[in-house]
Image (cartoon, rainbow, N blue to C red):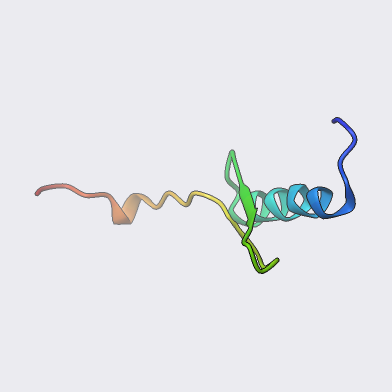
Length: 53
């Protein structure tokens, strides 16, 4: 990994944490203009699949 400042490194940690908690293949984290951070990961549940429109 390239050198990141401390705040960007926190985003990486948050994204990896979200990925681990969801047992997902990917995760993401963003910081808004006010400095708040949000993390998430895709969740797939077979019971929630759309079967008809």
